[in-house]
Image (cartoon, rainbow, N blue to C red; front, side, top):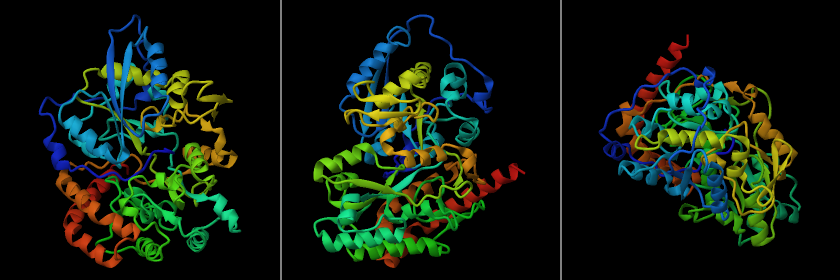
Length: 514
C-alpha cells in the first residue's frame, strides 16, 4: 500500500471493546482458499432492487463537491443496485473511538474504515466484522480481480478475508516536506540527507524567528518513530499491534524485540536526537497540543514536516501557496533499489463489513460497483471535466481543489488508481516502483497475522500507557531517560506478556511453513 494516513490515533481499550460486543450467534465459517482463483462472477442485477441506504464511516473531511459526486453515483445505480449512500466523515483523531463506540452500541452501520494502526485486529477478535470470502465469491468479482493473490494472501486473518485491503502498492511512501522557497532564499543546496535537513532547520531558526524549523505529528508519525522507515541497517519496524515505541521487529529474523529488556542503540539514537531537536528549539515547542500538524505547516508556521506518500500532495502545496505564497518540495530517504526494502505485503488501510449490517449483500455489490473504472474515477477524483481530467490511462490532472483525494479511505485499489500528473515524473516513478511486489525482499512474516485475544487486556493496558509516554519520548518533549524509566515501570509487565504470546504465534507460523 502506498498512501494510507498512518496518523497515530488514541487506541481503544480492548476490555471496553469486548464488553460492547454482541452476544448473538457467531458468523458462519468461510472458505479459506484464495477467492481470486475461483473465477467467480458477480451475479448481475436482473431487475431494479428495493432501495437501501448504506451507512459508511470513514476518516477525513467532507470535500466541498462530495454531495454532487454522490448524487451522480446514486443516479448511476438507480436502475440496478438502487443504493443511497450515507457517508459519515470522522476526524482521524477520533476514528478509533467513534467507530468502536458506534458498533458497541449496536447502531446500524454497514461499512467501516479500520486499520492495524487503529484497532483492526482487536475488532476482528471481538467479532465486530463479517467474514467476506463467500460474499466476495458471489458478489465481488471486480473487488477480487483488482487486487493480486499476493495482496489477498498477505491480508487474511486466521485464514479468512475479514476486511478489504485498501492499497495501491506494497510499501508506504514517506517524505519530508521542505519549504523550498525558504531553502532557496537562504542559498541552501538541495537536501539529500537527514543531516542536510537538520542543517536547514538551523538556518530557519536563525533567519526566521517566527517560523518553527520542524513540526511533527503524534503517534505512529511522531518524529522519532518516523525514523524507522529509513532504517536500512537493521530494518526496524513495528509489530502488528501498532506503534508503541517498545516492541519492534528487525533483521527480518522472525523475532520480536522488547526495548524494555535491552534498548537497541539505533532506537535510542532516534529518541535522544528528538530530545536534542526540542531542547535546541528546532522542534515546534508546543507540538503536543497541536491537533492538526499539517494545518500549522500549511499556514506557514513551520518549515519542515514528515508526511506520508511520495511527492507533495497538491492540496497541501496549494494551501501553502495561498497562505504565505510559499513553495513546497518533498525529499525522501527511500532507496529505490530492488531488494533493498522489506515488505510483508500487508495493507495499512481496510474497509470492513460490520457484523450488524442488515445489507451485507448489497454492501458488497456496491463496493464491487466502485471497482469498475468509470465508477472508481468518479468516487476517487470527482466529476470529470469539473474536478479533474484524465491524462492517458493511469494519470489525471486536477482542475480545482473542490474534491479532495481520499480513495484510501474506502475504495482504493492498485488496478484502477491513477497518479496525479502534478506529482512529476520522479515521484510517479517511485510510486510505480513500490507497486511492483518483485522489487521487495519478502518479509519472513508475510502472511502472518497476530491474534491478540490471549493478551487482549495487556494490549489495552499498553495502549493506554503508551498514550501517556510515547510521544513525549519520541518527540523529545520530556527528558528521555526519566520518561523511559516511567514508561517501563508501568508497562513492562504487559509488554513482556504480549512479546511472549506474539513470539509463540510467530514461531508456530514459521514452523508451519517448513
